[in-house]
Image 1 (spheres, rainbow, N blue to C red):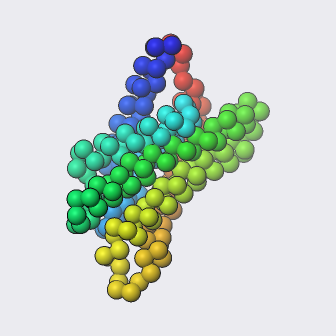
Image 2 (image 1 turned 120 degrees about the horizontal axis):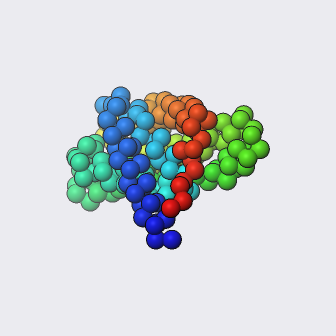
Length: 194
C-alpha cells in the first residue's frame, strides 16, 4: 500500500515536470496565455490515475510556473497579483484534471474495444478540462486584464474572445495528441502495481 502511494506521487511529479517542460514549446500571446502541449500530461494522469491525481498534477504545473517566474501578471496591487496568480496558474491548470471524470467511460469502451467511442470519450474529457480552464482564464481576464481593452469595451466579451484565441487551438491540439497517444500506447493509461 505504501509503495503504491509513493509510486503515485512519483508519477504525479514526473508528469508535472513534463507538463512544465512542454509549456516551453509554445506560441505565447501578448497579454498572457499560450498555445502549448501543457495539458497533455494532466489529461494523461487524470486518465491513468483519476481526477484527484490529474488535479494535483495541474496544481504542480501551475506551482512550477509560479516559482520559476515564468508568469504574466498585471501591474496591480500585491493582493490583486496574488489572486490573479492563484486563478490563472493554480486553479486554471488544476481544473484540467477534471478530464478524469470520463476515465470510467473510456475504460469501459476499451474493454468493449469500441475505438470510436474511446476517441469520443477522450475528446469530451479534453473538452471538459479545456472549458473549465477557459472559464477560469475568462474570469481573470475580466477582473485583472481589463486595462488592455479599449475604453468602454464589454470586459466579458473582450476576455471571452481573447482567451478563446488560444484556448480553442489548445483544446484541438490536446484532443488530437491525446487521442493518438492513448490509442497508440494504451499501456500509458495502466498504472503498474508494485
